[in-house]
Image 1: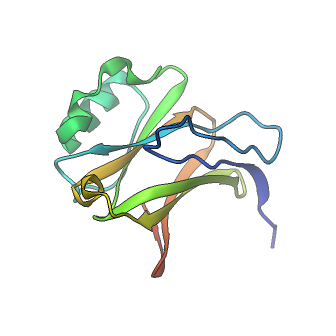
Image 2: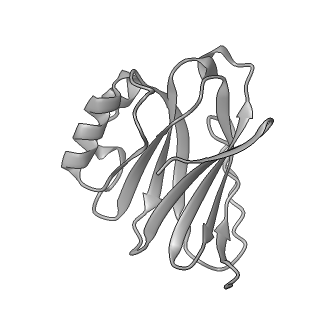
Length: 152
């Protein structure tokens, strides 16, 4: 069994007032460029990835809410992908970890309970990701209660 090689680990507090602090474990280019929580209208949809302007327009329309109001210029879709992962009610993204497991970028969103009223509405984590020639997997993980679910 091959042990996963650590590509990079990031700690990105989403929706925080100060700029996010990125901790890079190894000298690789960052994968996660930004992470924010955005209200959506359709929380029952699976996670989606936009790689073109057409994808981005379709994803924004499908999820609705404030996500639909984000501009086409939100990300440079020539070099960047946008990932939208609906979050369970009452949860927020506390940390984003990225590892390389056998040529798959695994993005893990560590979710924590939130007391903020805004986090109890239908929201999604919106991540801008550097485009890489690898397969992408997204995992939602909670510690209380311990659970893990593949989102994409």
